[in-house]
Length: 65
Image (tube, rainbow, N blue to C red; front, side, top):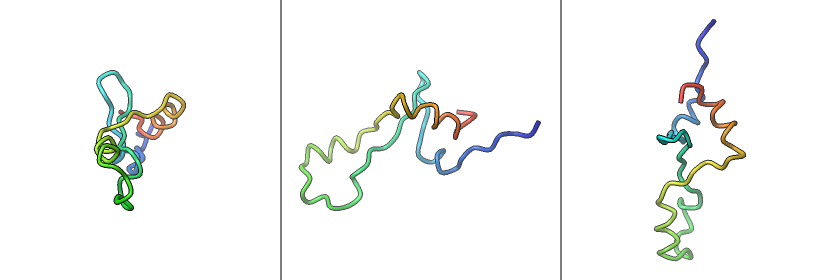
């Protein structure tokens, strides 16, 4: 049986944690930053986790993660 292909776009966006969850970066940090407060921008730097409802979809895109 041939190897399964990893979706390269997903591989660049998600990393697996030790407990098997997927880390992701947060949205809304690219532009229009003047009107966002410093604390909000600081919190957007931190990594988020993929929600439970999307976990199966991401794991299908990353079969070897």
